[in-house]
Length: 147
Image (cartoon, rainbow, N blue to C red; front, top):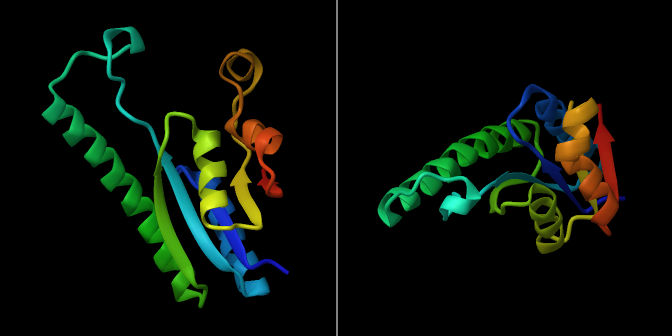
């Protein structure tokens, strides 16, 4: 059925439910599991809303964000492997979360993306949009959304 399932996480409680479902589905189908977390780049100019920092400090901050993301995906990878699932954790660098998820799915030849719906409602959803909605709209890979 599925050969490779990509599950997107941000480390939140809701996304951990998606990881659990992704592990269960991979175990059921014998698929490889790719656990992905997207981290942004640090804003590089005053107009992007950042406080000017040195290039060394900028690199240090971005590395810290990547390291923190790696802790999340490595923990989920270990959880999957403990259940007999062949898993890989990846950190994707992108300012656009949905594009990062879609790119990772393409790069790893995923035939399913598993992700949680996120809890933005009302004006926040209108103004900020939904990463899940963006993945649903733009991905050529089927998407399983969990609530």
